[in-house]
Figure 1 (tube, rainbow, N blue to C red):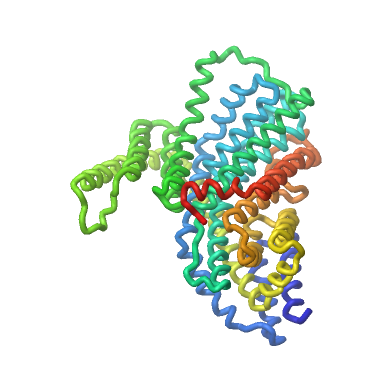
Figure 2: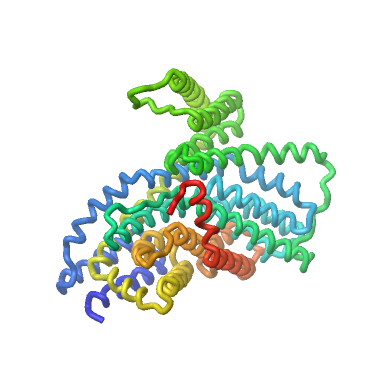
Length: 524
Protein backbone atom coordinates (compact mmCIF):
# COMPACT_ATOMS: atom_id res chain seq x y z
CA UNK A 1 0.00 0.00 0.00
CA UNK A 2 1.54 3.32 -1.08
CA UNK A 3 1.37 6.68 0.73
CA UNK A 4 -1.62 7.97 -1.31
CA UNK A 5 -3.75 4.93 -0.43
CA UNK A 6 -2.76 5.23 3.22
CA UNK A 7 -3.88 8.88 3.27
CA UNK A 8 -7.21 7.90 1.70
CA UNK A 9 -7.91 5.26 4.34
CA UNK A 10 -6.83 7.57 7.15
CA UNK A 11 -9.04 10.36 5.79
CA UNK A 12 -12.12 8.14 5.70
CA UNK A 13 -11.39 6.84 9.21
CA UNK A 14 -10.89 10.40 10.49
CA UNK A 15 -14.26 11.42 9.00
CA UNK A 16 -16.06 8.61 10.83
CA UNK A 17 -14.33 9.32 14.16
CA UNK A 18 -14.96 13.08 14.08
CA UNK A 19 -18.59 12.63 13.02
CA UNK A 20 -19.23 10.33 15.99
CA UNK A 21 -18.03 13.10 18.33
CA UNK A 22 -21.01 15.18 17.23
CA UNK A 23 -19.07 17.85 15.32
CA UNK A 24 -21.17 19.45 12.51
CA UNK A 25 -21.21 17.23 9.43
CA UNK A 26 -20.52 19.85 6.75
CA UNK A 27 -17.51 21.31 8.58
CA UNK A 28 -16.20 17.82 9.35
CA UNK A 29 -16.30 16.77 5.69
CA UNK A 30 -14.73 19.99 4.42
CA UNK A 31 -12.22 20.41 7.25
CA UNK A 32 -10.85 16.85 7.25
CA UNK A 33 -10.65 16.87 3.44
CA UNK A 34 -8.79 20.19 3.47
CA UNK A 35 -6.30 18.96 6.09
CA UNK A 36 -5.53 15.76 4.17
CA UNK A 37 -5.38 17.67 0.89
CA UNK A 38 -2.73 19.97 2.37
CA UNK A 39 -0.84 16.96 3.74
CA UNK A 40 -0.99 15.37 0.27
CA UNK A 41 0.41 18.55 -1.33
CA UNK A 42 3.22 18.77 1.24
CA UNK A 43 4.32 15.16 0.70
CA UNK A 44 3.88 15.48 -3.08
CA UNK A 45 1.09 12.97 -3.71
CA UNK A 46 -1.82 15.37 -4.35
CA UNK A 47 -2.38 17.78 -7.24
CA UNK A 48 -3.79 21.15 -6.15
CA UNK A 49 -5.72 21.28 -9.44
CA UNK A 50 -8.36 19.08 -7.82
CA UNK A 51 -9.00 21.82 -5.24
CA UNK A 52 -9.35 24.37 -8.05
CA UNK A 53 -12.35 22.43 -9.34
CA UNK A 54 -14.34 23.09 -6.15
CA UNK A 55 -15.90 26.44 -7.24
CA UNK A 56 -17.27 24.83 -10.42
CA UNK A 57 -18.66 21.95 -8.35
CA UNK A 58 -20.42 24.37 -6.00
CA UNK A 59 -21.78 26.45 -8.88
CA UNK A 60 -23.02 23.30 -10.61
CA UNK A 61 -24.81 22.11 -7.47
CA UNK A 62 -26.39 25.49 -6.77
CA UNK A 63 -27.73 25.74 -10.34
CA UNK A 64 -28.90 22.12 -10.50
CA UNK A 65 -32.60 22.23 -11.38
CA UNK A 66 -33.25 18.79 -9.91
CA UNK A 67 -32.03 19.88 -6.46
CA UNK A 68 -34.55 22.75 -6.43
CA UNK A 69 -37.08 20.03 -5.60
CA UNK A 70 -35.43 19.59 -2.18
CA UNK A 71 -36.57 22.88 -0.55
CA UNK A 72 -39.95 22.61 -2.27
CA UNK A 73 -40.63 19.12 -0.90
CA UNK A 74 -39.36 20.21 2.52
CA UNK A 75 -41.72 23.20 2.41
CA UNK A 76 -44.58 20.93 1.38
CA UNK A 77 -43.94 18.49 4.21
CA UNK A 78 -43.46 21.16 6.86
CA UNK A 79 -46.63 22.98 5.80
CA UNK A 80 -48.67 19.78 5.95
CA UNK A 81 -47.26 19.04 9.39
CA UNK A 82 -48.44 22.46 10.62
CA UNK A 83 -51.87 22.02 9.03
CA UNK A 84 -52.79 19.20 11.48
CA UNK A 85 -53.27 16.65 8.67
CA UNK A 86 -51.57 13.93 10.71
CA UNK A 87 -53.70 14.60 13.78
CA UNK A 88 -56.98 14.20 11.87
CA UNK A 89 -55.75 11.10 10.04
CA UNK A 90 -54.55 9.36 13.19
CA UNK A 91 -57.63 10.24 15.20
CA UNK A 92 -60.10 9.02 12.58
CA UNK A 93 -58.10 6.00 11.40
CA UNK A 94 -57.71 4.94 15.03
CA UNK A 95 -61.47 5.06 15.52
CA UNK A 96 -62.05 3.21 12.26
CA UNK A 97 -59.62 0.31 12.89
CA UNK A 98 -59.39 0.50 16.68
CA UNK A 99 -62.13 -2.07 17.26
CA UNK A 100 -59.90 -4.68 15.60
CA UNK A 101 -57.20 -6.43 17.59
CA UNK A 102 -54.02 -4.59 16.60
CA UNK A 103 -56.10 -1.92 14.87
CA UNK A 104 -54.17 1.03 16.28
CA UNK A 105 -50.96 -0.48 14.88
CA UNK A 106 -52.57 -0.84 11.45
CA UNK A 107 -53.68 2.79 11.66
CA UNK A 108 -50.15 3.93 12.47
CA UNK A 109 -48.71 2.06 9.47
CA UNK A 110 -51.37 3.37 7.06
CA UNK A 111 -51.09 6.94 8.29
CA UNK A 112 -47.29 6.64 8.18
CA UNK A 113 -47.50 5.62 4.52
CA UNK A 114 -49.83 8.52 3.71
CA UNK A 115 -47.64 11.02 5.53
CA UNK A 116 -44.57 9.56 3.81
CA UNK A 117 -46.15 10.19 0.42
CA UNK A 118 -47.19 13.70 1.37
CA UNK A 119 -44.44 14.99 3.67
CA UNK A 120 -41.38 12.75 3.41
CA UNK A 121 -39.86 14.28 6.58
CA UNK A 122 -38.97 11.49 9.01
CA UNK A 123 -38.42 13.61 12.13
CA UNK A 124 -41.74 15.45 11.80
CA UNK A 125 -43.68 12.23 11.16
CA UNK A 126 -42.14 10.30 14.07
CA UNK A 127 -42.57 13.17 16.53
CA UNK A 128 -46.17 13.83 15.45
CA UNK A 129 -47.22 10.19 15.70
CA UNK A 130 -45.23 9.76 18.91
CA UNK A 131 -47.14 12.63 20.53
CA UNK A 132 -50.55 11.60 19.22
CA UNK A 133 -50.63 7.81 18.83
CA UNK A 134 -48.19 6.53 21.46
CA UNK A 135 -50.11 7.72 24.56
CA UNK A 136 -53.33 6.21 23.17
CA UNK A 137 -51.64 2.89 22.37
CA UNK A 138 -50.08 2.68 25.83
CA UNK A 139 -53.35 3.64 27.51
CA UNK A 140 -55.15 0.86 25.61
CA UNK A 141 -52.66 -1.75 26.87
CA UNK A 142 -50.32 -2.11 23.88
CA UNK A 143 -46.89 -3.60 24.47
CA UNK A 144 -44.57 -0.53 24.68
CA UNK A 145 -41.96 -2.17 22.44
CA UNK A 146 -44.53 -2.98 19.73
CA UNK A 147 -46.09 0.50 19.96
CA UNK A 148 -42.78 2.38 19.72
CA UNK A 149 -41.43 0.08 17.01
CA UNK A 150 -44.57 0.54 14.91
CA UNK A 151 -44.40 4.33 15.19
CA UNK A 152 -40.67 4.59 14.49
CA UNK A 153 -40.89 2.23 11.49
CA UNK A 154 -43.94 3.99 10.04
CA UNK A 155 -42.11 7.31 10.38
CA UNK A 156 -39.19 6.07 8.29
CA UNK A 157 -41.43 5.22 5.32
CA UNK A 158 -40.79 8.77 4.15
CA UNK A 159 -37.33 7.58 3.11
CA UNK A 160 -38.56 5.09 0.50
CA UNK A 161 -42.11 6.07 -0.51
CA UNK A 162 -41.96 8.86 -3.09
CA UNK A 163 -41.80 11.79 -3.16
CA UNK A 164 -38.83 11.46 -0.82
CA UNK A 165 -35.89 13.77 -0.17
CA UNK A 166 -33.66 10.68 -0.08
CA UNK A 167 -34.79 9.67 -3.57
CA UNK A 168 -34.25 13.20 -4.93
CA UNK A 169 -30.68 13.39 -3.60
CA UNK A 170 -29.93 9.77 -4.48
CA UNK A 171 -31.43 10.15 -7.97
CA UNK A 172 -29.27 13.17 -8.77
CA UNK A 173 -26.13 11.47 -7.43
CA UNK A 174 -26.83 8.25 -9.33
CA UNK A 175 -27.55 10.15 -12.55
CA UNK A 176 -24.08 11.72 -12.38
CA UNK A 177 -22.50 8.37 -11.48
CA UNK A 178 -24.29 6.62 -14.37
CA UNK A 179 -22.99 9.16 -16.87
CA UNK A 180 -19.46 8.79 -15.48
CA UNK A 181 -19.69 5.00 -15.71
CA UNK A 182 -20.76 5.13 -19.35
CA UNK A 183 -18.03 7.61 -20.27
CA UNK A 184 -15.44 5.32 -18.65
CA UNK A 185 -16.78 2.52 -20.87
CA UNK A 186 -16.28 4.65 -23.98
CA UNK A 187 -19.99 5.48 -24.44
CA UNK A 188 -19.96 9.14 -25.46
CA UNK A 189 -23.74 9.43 -25.93
CA UNK A 190 -24.69 8.23 -22.46
CA UNK A 191 -28.20 7.31 -21.39
CA UNK A 192 -29.64 9.08 -18.39
CA UNK A 193 -31.84 8.21 -15.45
CA UNK A 194 -34.01 10.74 -13.65
CA UNK A 195 -35.45 11.25 -10.21
CA UNK A 196 -38.81 10.32 -11.74
CA UNK A 197 -37.40 6.90 -12.70
CA UNK A 198 -36.31 6.37 -9.11
CA UNK A 199 -39.71 7.52 -7.79
CA UNK A 200 -41.45 4.96 -10.00
CA UNK A 201 -38.93 2.26 -9.04
CA UNK A 202 -39.36 2.84 -5.30
CA UNK A 203 -43.17 2.86 -5.31
CA UNK A 204 -43.79 -0.91 -5.29
CA UNK A 205 -41.00 -1.71 -2.75
CA UNK A 206 -42.37 1.04 -0.50
CA UNK A 207 -45.87 -0.43 -0.60
CA UNK A 208 -44.39 -3.89 -0.05
CA UNK A 209 -42.74 -2.61 3.11
CA UNK A 210 -46.06 -1.22 4.37
CA UNK A 211 -47.61 -4.66 3.71
CA UNK A 212 -44.80 -6.33 5.71
CA UNK A 213 -45.36 -3.96 8.64
CA UNK A 214 -49.11 -4.64 8.76
CA UNK A 215 -48.58 -8.40 8.29
CA UNK A 216 -46.18 -8.44 11.26
CA UNK A 217 -48.71 -6.57 13.40
CA UNK A 218 -51.46 -9.03 12.37
CA UNK A 219 -49.22 -11.93 13.40
CA UNK A 220 -48.40 -10.29 16.74
CA UNK A 221 -52.10 -9.60 17.40
CA UNK A 222 -52.95 -13.22 16.55
CA UNK A 223 -50.13 -14.97 18.42
CA UNK A 224 -49.95 -12.56 21.36
CA UNK A 225 -53.37 -10.88 21.78
CA UNK A 226 -52.29 -9.06 24.95
CA UNK A 227 -49.64 -7.13 23.00
CA UNK A 228 -52.22 -5.25 20.89
CA UNK A 229 -55.74 -5.39 22.32
CA UNK A 230 -58.80 -4.00 20.57
CA UNK A 231 -60.30 -0.68 21.63
CA UNK A 232 -63.77 -0.69 23.16
CA UNK A 233 -66.48 0.45 20.76
CA UNK A 234 -67.18 4.18 20.78
CA UNK A 235 -70.95 4.45 20.47
CA UNK A 236 -70.92 8.24 20.85
CA UNK A 237 -70.09 8.62 17.14
CA UNK A 238 -72.51 7.00 14.65
CA UNK A 239 -70.93 4.83 11.98
CA UNK A 240 -72.01 7.19 9.20
CA UNK A 241 -70.46 10.19 10.94
CA UNK A 242 -67.24 8.24 11.55
CA UNK A 243 -66.96 7.34 7.86
CA UNK A 244 -67.66 10.94 6.87
CA UNK A 245 -64.95 12.28 9.19
CA UNK A 246 -62.49 9.67 7.97
CA UNK A 247 -63.14 10.58 4.33
CA UNK A 248 -62.80 14.28 5.12
CA UNK A 249 -59.40 13.63 6.74
CA UNK A 250 -58.29 11.17 4.05
CA UNK A 251 -59.37 12.74 0.75
CA UNK A 252 -57.39 16.06 0.75
CA UNK A 253 -53.92 14.59 1.44
CA UNK A 254 -54.65 11.65 -0.87
CA UNK A 255 -55.68 14.05 -3.64
CA UNK A 256 -52.44 15.99 -3.13
CA UNK A 257 -50.40 12.76 -3.28
CA UNK A 258 -52.17 11.70 -6.49
CA UNK A 259 -51.64 15.15 -8.03
CA UNK A 260 -47.92 15.24 -7.23
CA UNK A 261 -47.08 11.63 -8.07
CA UNK A 262 -49.56 11.47 -10.96
CA UNK A 263 -48.03 14.53 -12.60
CA UNK A 264 -44.58 12.89 -12.42
CA UNK A 265 -45.57 9.38 -13.47
CA UNK A 266 -47.96 10.73 -16.12
CA UNK A 267 -45.20 12.76 -17.74
CA UNK A 268 -47.00 16.05 -17.09
CA UNK A 269 -44.30 17.52 -14.85
CA UNK A 270 -40.71 16.94 -13.81
CA UNK A 271 -40.07 16.13 -10.13
CA UNK A 272 -39.08 19.77 -9.54
CA UNK A 273 -42.27 21.06 -11.14
CA UNK A 274 -44.30 18.48 -9.21
CA UNK A 275 -42.60 19.65 -5.99
CA UNK A 276 -43.78 23.19 -6.76
CA UNK A 277 -47.28 21.80 -7.31
CA UNK A 278 -47.04 20.02 -3.96
CA UNK A 279 -45.98 23.22 -2.21
CA UNK A 280 -48.98 25.06 -3.69
CA UNK A 281 -51.31 22.24 -2.71
CA UNK A 282 -49.94 22.20 0.83
CA UNK A 283 -50.55 25.95 1.20
CA UNK A 284 -54.12 25.56 -0.05
CA UNK A 285 -54.76 22.60 2.25
CA UNK A 286 -53.32 24.41 5.27
CA UNK A 287 -55.32 27.54 4.39
CA UNK A 288 -58.53 25.54 4.16
CA UNK A 289 -57.88 23.95 7.56
CA UNK A 290 -57.11 27.36 9.05
CA UNK A 291 -60.65 28.51 8.28
CA UNK A 292 -62.05 31.86 7.14
CA UNK A 293 -61.02 31.53 3.48
CA UNK A 294 -62.59 28.23 2.51
CA UNK A 295 -64.37 29.32 -0.69
CA UNK A 296 -61.34 30.91 -2.45
CA UNK A 297 -59.14 27.98 -1.38
CA UNK A 298 -61.59 25.38 -2.64
CA UNK A 299 -61.99 27.22 -5.93
CA UNK A 300 -58.19 27.36 -6.26
CA UNK A 301 -57.96 23.63 -5.51
CA UNK A 302 -60.53 22.84 -8.18
CA UNK A 303 -58.72 25.14 -10.62
CA UNK A 304 -55.42 23.33 -9.93
CA UNK A 305 -56.98 19.96 -10.72
CA UNK A 306 -58.59 21.38 -13.86
CA UNK A 307 -55.24 22.85 -14.96
CA UNK A 308 -53.52 19.48 -14.53
CA UNK A 309 -56.19 17.76 -16.61
CA UNK A 310 -55.97 20.50 -19.24
CA UNK A 311 -52.19 20.08 -19.40
CA UNK A 312 -52.61 16.34 -19.89
CA UNK A 313 -55.08 16.61 -22.77
CA UNK A 314 -53.89 19.77 -24.55
CA UNK A 315 -50.63 21.36 -25.68
CA UNK A 316 -50.41 24.60 -23.68
CA UNK A 317 -46.95 25.66 -24.83
CA UNK A 318 -46.95 29.28 -25.98
CA UNK A 319 -43.45 29.30 -27.52
CA UNK A 320 -44.60 27.77 -30.80
CA UNK A 321 -44.74 29.10 -34.34
CA UNK A 322 -48.21 27.73 -34.95
CA UNK A 323 -50.96 27.39 -32.37
CA UNK A 324 -54.30 25.91 -33.37
CA UNK A 325 -57.55 27.62 -32.43
CA UNK A 326 -58.43 24.86 -29.95
CA UNK A 327 -55.05 25.14 -28.23
CA UNK A 328 -55.36 28.93 -28.11
CA UNK A 329 -58.71 28.60 -26.31
CA UNK A 330 -57.09 26.13 -23.93
CA UNK A 331 -54.21 28.54 -23.25
CA UNK A 332 -56.58 31.40 -22.43
CA UNK A 333 -58.60 29.08 -20.19
CA UNK A 334 -55.36 28.06 -18.47
CA UNK A 335 -54.58 31.75 -17.82
CA UNK A 336 -58.01 32.11 -16.18
CA UNK A 337 -57.40 29.04 -14.03
CA UNK A 338 -54.00 30.42 -12.98
CA UNK A 339 -55.72 33.66 -11.90
CA UNK A 340 -58.15 31.67 -9.72
CA UNK A 341 -55.23 29.72 -8.22
CA UNK A 342 -53.32 32.93 -7.51
CA UNK A 343 -56.35 34.44 -5.76
CA UNK A 344 -56.84 31.32 -3.63
CA UNK A 345 -53.14 31.19 -2.77
CA UNK A 346 -53.16 34.85 -1.74
CA UNK A 347 -56.16 34.25 0.51
CA UNK A 348 -54.55 31.16 2.08
CA UNK A 349 -51.19 32.87 2.62
CA UNK A 350 -52.93 35.92 4.14
CA UNK A 351 -54.70 33.66 6.62
CA UNK A 352 -51.60 31.61 7.41
CA UNK A 353 -49.53 34.77 7.82
CA UNK A 354 -51.73 36.05 10.62
CA UNK A 355 -51.75 32.60 12.24
CA UNK A 356 -47.94 32.64 12.31
CA UNK A 357 -47.74 29.44 10.25
CA UNK A 358 -45.93 30.95 7.25
CA UNK A 359 -43.09 32.28 9.41
CA UNK A 360 -42.60 28.91 11.15
CA UNK A 361 -42.70 26.93 7.91
CA UNK A 362 -40.30 29.19 5.97
CA UNK A 363 -37.81 29.28 8.84
CA UNK A 364 -37.89 25.49 9.21
CA UNK A 365 -37.54 25.03 5.44
CA UNK A 366 -34.58 27.42 5.31
CA UNK A 367 -32.81 25.63 8.18
CA UNK A 368 -33.21 22.13 6.73
CA UNK A 369 -32.37 23.21 3.16
CA UNK A 370 -29.27 25.10 4.32
CA UNK A 371 -28.10 22.02 6.21
CA UNK A 372 -28.51 19.81 3.13
CA UNK A 373 -26.69 22.14 0.76
CA UNK A 374 -23.84 22.97 3.15
CA UNK A 375 -23.28 19.23 3.59
CA UNK A 376 -23.35 18.93 -0.20
CA UNK A 377 -20.54 21.49 -0.48
CA UNK A 378 -18.47 19.73 2.19
CA UNK A 379 -19.02 16.39 0.46
CA UNK A 380 -17.92 17.90 -2.87
CA UNK A 381 -14.58 18.90 -1.34
CA UNK A 382 -14.23 15.49 0.31
CA UNK A 383 -14.84 13.64 -2.98
CA UNK A 384 -12.32 15.85 -4.84
CA UNK A 385 -9.57 15.15 -2.29
CA UNK A 386 -10.46 11.46 -2.10
CA UNK A 387 -10.28 11.18 -5.89
CA UNK A 388 -7.08 13.23 -6.03
CA UNK A 389 -5.43 10.81 -3.63
CA UNK A 390 -6.35 7.89 -5.86
CA UNK A 391 -9.26 6.66 -3.75
CA UNK A 392 -11.43 5.86 -6.78
CA UNK A 393 -8.81 3.51 -8.19
CA UNK A 394 -8.29 1.83 -4.84
CA UNK A 395 -12.04 1.22 -4.32
CA UNK A 396 -12.39 0.05 -7.93
CA UNK A 397 -9.60 -2.50 -7.50
CA UNK A 398 -11.04 -3.70 -4.19
CA UNK A 399 -14.59 -4.18 -5.49
CA UNK A 400 -13.47 -5.68 -8.80
CA UNK A 401 -11.37 -8.28 -6.97
CA UNK A 402 -14.34 -9.48 -4.91
CA UNK A 403 -15.38 -13.09 -5.58
CA UNK A 404 -18.69 -13.28 -7.37
CA UNK A 405 -18.07 -10.31 -9.67
CA UNK A 406 -20.82 -7.68 -9.65
CA UNK A 407 -22.91 -9.64 -7.13
CA UNK A 408 -20.03 -9.90 -4.66
CA UNK A 409 -19.19 -6.21 -5.04
CA UNK A 410 -22.84 -5.25 -4.50
CA UNK A 411 -23.08 -7.37 -1.33
CA UNK A 412 -19.96 -5.71 0.08
CA UNK A 413 -21.30 -2.20 -0.71
CA UNK A 414 -24.69 -3.01 0.86
CA UNK A 415 -22.99 -4.34 4.00
CA UNK A 416 -20.75 -1.26 4.27
CA UNK A 417 -23.72 1.10 3.83
CA UNK A 418 -25.72 -0.86 6.42
CA UNK A 419 -22.90 -0.62 8.97
CA UNK A 420 -22.27 3.07 8.23
CA UNK A 421 -25.98 3.65 8.81
CA UNK A 422 -25.39 2.86 12.49
CA UNK A 423 -23.26 6.00 12.80
CA UNK A 424 -23.87 8.33 9.83
CA UNK A 425 -26.93 10.15 8.55
CA UNK A 426 -28.33 9.24 5.13
CA UNK A 427 -27.20 12.59 3.69
CA UNK A 428 -23.54 11.90 4.47
CA UNK A 429 -23.80 8.40 3.00
CA UNK A 430 -25.44 9.68 -0.20
CA UNK A 431 -22.97 12.52 -0.72
CA UNK A 432 -19.80 10.73 0.41
CA UNK A 433 -20.15 6.97 -0.18
CA UNK A 434 -22.49 6.72 -3.18
CA UNK A 435 -20.38 8.88 -5.57
CA UNK A 436 -17.40 6.64 -4.81
CA UNK A 437 -18.99 3.20 -5.18
CA UNK A 438 -21.87 3.78 -7.62
CA UNK A 439 -19.78 4.37 -10.80
CA UNK A 440 -17.83 1.18 -10.11
CA UNK A 441 -20.98 -0.91 -9.62
CA UNK A 442 -22.58 0.59 -12.73
CA UNK A 443 -19.49 -0.20 -14.80
CA UNK A 444 -19.93 -3.81 -13.67
CA UNK A 445 -23.34 -3.82 -15.37
CA UNK A 446 -25.75 -3.28 -12.46
CA UNK A 447 -29.07 -1.63 -13.35
CA UNK A 448 -28.99 1.97 -12.00
CA UNK A 449 -32.66 2.10 -10.95
CA UNK A 450 -32.45 -1.26 -9.17
CA UNK A 451 -29.25 -0.11 -7.47
CA UNK A 452 -30.88 3.16 -6.41
CA UNK A 453 -33.88 1.43 -4.85
CA UNK A 454 -31.64 -1.08 -3.07
CA UNK A 455 -29.58 1.79 -1.64
CA UNK A 456 -32.73 3.70 -0.59
CA UNK A 457 -34.09 0.70 1.35
CA UNK A 458 -30.68 0.16 2.91
CA UNK A 459 -30.46 3.83 3.92
CA UNK A 460 -33.91 3.59 5.48
CA UNK A 461 -32.60 1.05 7.97
CA UNK A 462 -30.11 3.66 9.22
CA UNK A 463 -33.02 5.49 10.85
CA UNK A 464 -34.03 2.44 12.89
CA UNK A 465 -30.81 0.64 13.75
CA UNK A 466 -29.86 0.98 17.44
CA UNK A 467 -28.08 2.66 19.07
CA UNK A 468 -27.85 5.73 16.78
CA UNK A 469 -31.03 5.48 14.69
CA UNK A 470 -32.37 9.01 14.30
CA UNK A 471 -36.02 7.90 14.38
CA UNK A 472 -35.33 6.28 17.76
CA UNK A 473 -33.86 9.54 19.07
CA UNK A 474 -36.86 11.50 17.82
CA UNK A 475 -39.24 9.06 19.50
CA UNK A 476 -37.24 8.99 22.73
CA UNK A 477 -37.62 12.77 22.92
CA UNK A 478 -41.44 12.63 22.96
CA UNK A 479 -42.11 9.24 24.59
CA UNK A 480 -43.39 9.17 28.20
CA UNK A 481 -40.90 8.43 30.97
CA UNK A 482 -42.62 5.08 31.51
CA UNK A 483 -41.22 3.90 28.15
CA UNK A 484 -37.57 2.91 28.48
CA UNK A 485 -34.90 3.35 25.83
CA UNK A 486 -34.35 -0.41 25.73
CA UNK A 487 -38.04 -0.94 24.96
CA UNK A 488 -37.72 1.45 22.01
CA UNK A 489 -34.62 -0.39 20.77
CA UNK A 490 -36.29 -3.79 21.26
CA UNK A 491 -39.36 -2.64 19.36
CA UNK A 492 -37.31 -1.37 16.42
CA UNK A 493 -35.33 -4.57 15.82
CA UNK A 494 -38.17 -6.63 14.22
CA UNK A 495 -38.89 -3.77 11.84
CA UNK A 496 -35.22 -3.54 10.88
CA UNK A 497 -35.51 -7.25 10.09
CA UNK A 498 -38.58 -6.56 7.91
CA UNK A 499 -36.66 -3.88 6.03
CA UNK A 500 -33.86 -6.36 5.40
CA UNK A 501 -36.47 -8.87 4.15
CA UNK A 502 -37.77 -6.19 1.75
CA UNK A 503 -34.19 -5.52 0.65
CA UNK A 504 -33.70 -9.23 -0.03
CA UNK A 505 -37.01 -9.37 -1.95
CA UNK A 506 -35.90 -6.53 -4.25
CA UNK A 507 -32.47 -8.16 -4.60
CA UNK A 508 -33.93 -11.50 -5.72
CA UNK A 509 -36.78 -9.98 -7.75
CA UNK A 510 -35.33 -6.88 -9.47
CA UNK A 511 -38.60 -6.41 -11.39
CA UNK A 512 -40.08 -5.00 -8.18
CA UNK A 513 -37.92 -1.94 -8.81
CA UNK A 514 -37.57 -1.94 -12.60
CA UNK A 515 -40.99 -2.99 -13.90
CA UNK A 516 -42.90 0.23 -13.21
CA UNK A 517 -40.25 2.62 -14.63
CA UNK A 518 -40.07 0.52 -17.78
CA UNK A 519 -43.85 0.46 -18.07
CA UNK A 520 -44.28 4.21 -17.58
CA UNK A 521 -41.12 5.74 -19.02
CA UNK A 522 -39.75 2.91 -21.15
CA UNK A 523 -36.52 3.24 -19.15
CA UNK A 524 -33.53 0.98 -19.82
